[in-house]
Image (cartoon, rainbow, N blue to C red; front, side, top):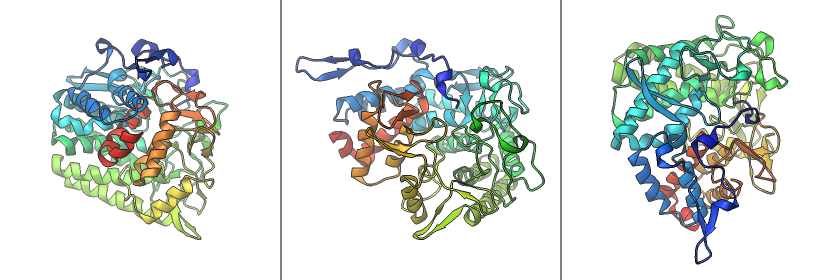
Length: 479
């Protein structure tokens, strides 16, 4: 998303102000008592009994009051502040804003509610929320599979000032039209996860089925075997990462079977159009979609097409997306099929660091471990080390700016107790007294941060704490 210094935050209308020293009181024993930063119950957008129960159980297992307070603020933040549940066109409907931007990103909306998926079986209200979001995703894909963000009203024009004059085929209902592979992968991940968790097939109606065929068609189009395809994008901006080369079609490529992406999960332009994390994510998503199509819709033909495309992308990534180093091979971040390869990593997921988190490979996979080591090092130009912490950023907020999301991903992809504990310590020491996660913070001064209200980062932090409560409870007791 665009740098949020340009946006008017709506945080004050939905939640208490960011915590300052005045929000920390001291009891008779002189110990700090942290005041909840959740909105009052009457002002919360959505309440889930299952989420509240897990929140209370997990919080009770955290030894440090500040960390427990952060978890309480962050884990329910998506439900508290970003969810609108209702009906649209006679179906359940759920619209999820990303936080301080009044639009729904396909990626963010899926990731924001992901930590609640395991709880849906025991919570009817959550089931209705997920049904509504699956319906909304299908509607968005039917409007424009190339768009990354949408409006609440599917007939409205974009309310994002920076997107209103883009040179592309803008459609009603679209907020921003940056083509990113993960925008179509995340809804599949969410739908598959919900189905696996609940066995509920009611959201997967004919409209969803049609939308999934559009996903397959779009991925095929962006292999660009028969020309440049229908998508192009340009924007008048002083920031070059906001537009694309060659009349909006991107830098030249050789059609090798991978999917072209004009933008990364950060919403920044790709340099080489074959983004490796995005393509690997598509492989997993296509296999998940094939499983659902066979089991739920009895559509073996489309399922077979999904598997064939997944196999083709995987083979192309193996052939063109691997860098052969002196100590073994590792994944590139972007390539062009001609032999040019870019190594870096960006904090936004899918990233190279996040591959096991998304189910793309095993955590102990040797190539992944080499890639992970390179990404969390000076080999990555967007790896930063400072007095406050170390972590990965990206071009979106510039040099020196560490994204807490990258620190979380390092913890998610580790079994090393000391490494995970260090990540938790960095997250706890860099929230700048607010009790929430941010988009990014300065490597030396966490008080310099972007986005006071970034729901994805908040719930991802909550997801990490819940995971650690099961896998490394000692870290939480001692934190």
